[in-house]
Image 1 (cartoon, one colour):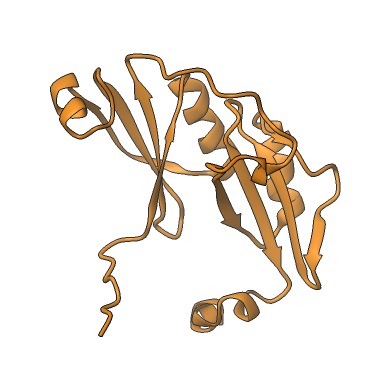
Image 2 (cartoon, helix red, strand yellow):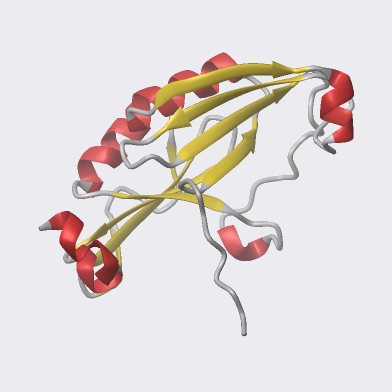
Length: 164
């Protein structure tokens, strides 16, 4: 019998960043995330944890639903990012953040105003009937997806009670 993993908190995602103040401002302005923690981890702990040879600072930002994005700024600068590609799935290690919203155009405009760079053009892409998305890059090249569903409960039936 396979046991289902029991999560004790919403999922978190970590992003390695070079310019923490710039990236912090971007995620706060673009998505309204709030700072919930700001910690510096010493080099000896960072090394044992397989995160960095040097110390790093981690700022945790939280969404209104409780998910968190950790911006991790190592004191030893990370290696340069490989050349960006036009297509997300061109790289095997491709990953991106997804924000599911009820006003895709409004959120995209806010993200662009905060320094995000559109990948999918000026108009949202309808990938399935009633499902629209836009992909953008943050100021350091991390990919962000903004999605709007005509009916979120068709995508996530478990949210039917929440949205009622």
